Image (cartoon, rainbow over all chains, first blue to last red; front, top):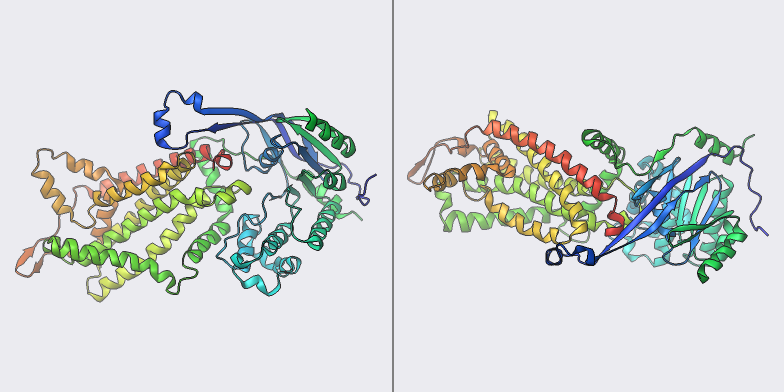
Length: 255
Length: 316
């Protein structure tokens, strides 16, 4: 019951992301200040708590697929996305990628409130890996997509939250990524803009870009993904077809 | 006709895999790798420096003039309080130039270290969400400190020209050496402390206090000859060596030797004659050693930074 439009078939699609035995341990320290560290010196075991956020994750993602990472809260899906993006380094194992990567983890993370929209477009473009020249070339198209209009020369602290996110999204989709990591950011803006985002994602899929989603919305996953990986307590409990994956997700909530 | 998707797949097929975590490499190899990575992001570094400078005085009407008002005020305070009231100016010719010379080079160092220390925490939003070589943030802080330094330098050199004291001599060669030493040590500490500050927030307060002490540990508002006088008369002349161990002290002395012409001449002030100021023995050798040790320290600090940065995103 796929709602997806027919994707162009890709012959011998290459693997673009592969992780080998990736494990990530989180240590939660309860004593953050020097005084507490000294007072608790030698007993530091009691003031630490560690757990495996990810355990022996080995996945391969081929070009042109859209993969949904799902799981209950705290199952490690966002951590896995960050490890794939290189934002967090795993304690064990490694991640290999090829192609240009863009991460939509939080829209407008690099925005500076005191700078104008225009200045922020160049800054954010650069953060996402565009050269100044490329940003200048895309500039009109970015402004048009964001529907910001004349406000582009206003400081972004005066933007409404919708404008802020629209501008950020517009920059991100112009980066021309081969791999796009998306974390729960598609539920932004008003309904027409959300539709625009979805259309853009579909266009990306048509162009053979690889997309990795983290989402809580089973509907969105069913709508967009052709492969689902279900995580539970840092381990993969299901990896395969979307429909079966959503059933597996529901099951994992119960456990 | 091949589709866009197929073209993309074929292109990706020919690309080599890249490991996302590049913390490996030896001491020198790893350092070199990081340098190359930063060089690839130099456009971004440039933008971040601009952002820092633009954002700082964005809504103020005087703008970057504020970055000059601070050192000039300090100059006035030290000139009046220490120079005139406490009488330090009596033994130091051209006291105003002397103090401003010291304040300028010290300002560069302290701004690099203190804004550098805060740079990782201050950019937490970016670090948690995007992968960039994280050294970029302390370096951007360094860049904006250099910008402020250049403005002060213009004022300083302008003042020496107006007063007819521009030091046209071989001593000018000390100026770039002093700046280099301050940059190397400043960046090294900025890297080390910014990374430690992520794990232990006390570091930023510690730096504040340390900067206060270190300001008085270098001959900025008092002269080297006063230090020599005080220490050689005491029972512990080795203290002089300890005093000179501080890399910033050596750099400050070299910077003064370069730009404070009155220090190298015999001057008559009111009715007393002041001979050329003494300089530490073997200043050249000390500068060389400080620079070489600084470079080694910088490499070590960068490696420590690289080791610690793997957990930045979750520790912030």
